[in-house]
Image (cartoon, rainbow, N blue to C red; front, top):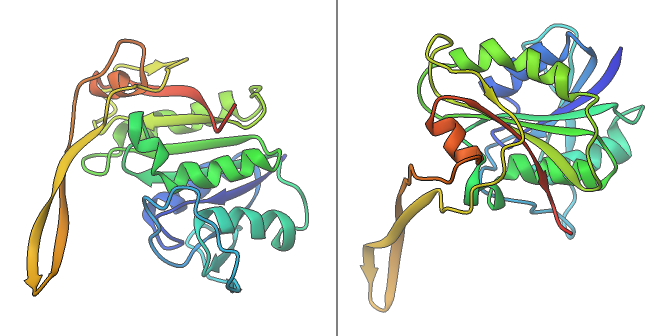
Length: 237
């Protein structure tokens, strides 16, 4: 039986983290330590100058112990590993993120930020993400199988497994593509539009949309083609 820590960037009350905990329970004992609120696109941000509150919360998955924190996803991993957990986990699961963590978007992802923090602490870590709209069919069909395959599959120093599920039904999903590399294409394009002017002070709002173009063999190309993308991502050399 494994000991598994789960965190995310969408917050302790997100649907994705509860679904992931339900899957993780099939492999062993599960504890959740996650932010009290949304922290998407915060990357590997960490708290150094302010205290971090941690408190137990009711969780919708029976048998799972859960804690919310005022910290970032990266903080959640650090606090969990160094203060909250009574053991070092055999595996850390991060997600299920509402939105792909592929191509250039990985650098912004706080789900991956949490996963990289766990990897830095010497933990075997898997990040799970899915399209932010549409059905969970492909995810529900393959996530347990992939978790079982990757939970003991070796990783290098500061590496994580990065899994992305296409936003389609189980029937539409064409299968799993392994050893996907990170696409070097930008996943988003956009601009900043002025929305308010007050004297010399201008307020801008970002306007962006995904770019559905990618190289063969990459994570983005896989999900465009309705495949689950599985690959390794290294935090730094």
